[in-house]
Image 1 (cartoon, rainbow, N blue to C red):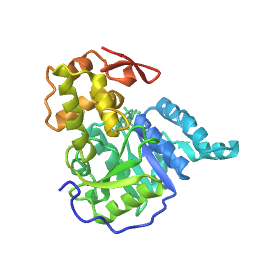
Image 2 (cartoon, rainbow, N blue to C red):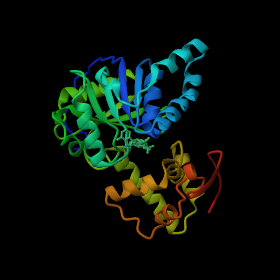
Image 3 (cartoon, protein in one colour):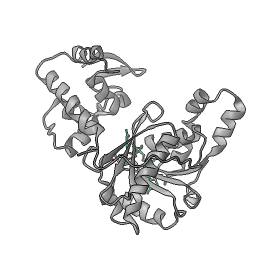
Image 4 (spheres, rainbow, N blue to C red):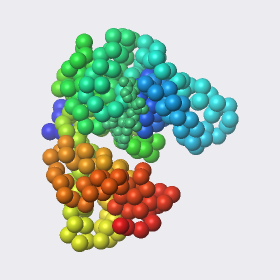
Length: 291
Ligand code: NAI
């Protein structure tokens, strides 16, 4: 049911230019990745400081991907600060990765839709909104698809290509072709809460958190999962994703975390790796000890 419909026809498509709106955690890294795969990318944000920060943060990726200085300089030159969104009119692919607020996404995308090049792909990186809700304000709602990248973008091969109720099949196919062109793995899913990955991950992480509440030791849980073959255990994973994000996704999927350890940690600002403490205390992105 989640993977509704037939896999779309295989399509080779090599877009040259992308425009990314939102230069936060995801937008900047998506832009950097596309540049590293050879594209030219314009990066837009309401905050020029955020654009500068997002671009600077890609230096590490370029240093890893390109051996010579001319290659790195060429990559830097392909990542263009674009506070006014002028790149929209030239882009083959436009990806929206701004704050997770339906009304703001609708407003921004409606404005962008009027300036798109004919045939350009229009996508949102939303993690929890429904594609059809975002598309409702567009002149052509069938044009919008979801491209749900995972964090950190450079490490995660999977991208969910989300088919909204009205998304046209050729847009879904081109979404999958674009993901393939940037050397990621496309997984086509239906637009349902949590899409596919979070629907699978959330019960898994919640189950592990429940075990802790029942007195089980978190290191043992994580170790068991690693022994089973997971790259990291579910509690370490929750700390990596961010406990606020976990709690948000859990709410959307109807899991109640009220009164749980997860809620108490979030309320105390202990959000995992990014704040230095969650279920574990973190130093240099390694667990120091548990609380
Ligand atoms: P963030 O808060 O790091 O960045 C959002 C950026 O959008 C900020 O730089 C902000 O200045 C900018 N912005 C806000 N309103 C804008 C507007 N009207 N025009 C242009 N820029 C605007 O957020 P993050 O984490 O990067 O999330 C972005 C999107 O990606 C959200 O839809 C989120 O659900 C989704 N997502 C997040 C993941 C994560 O792990 N953080 C994973 C997968 C998807």
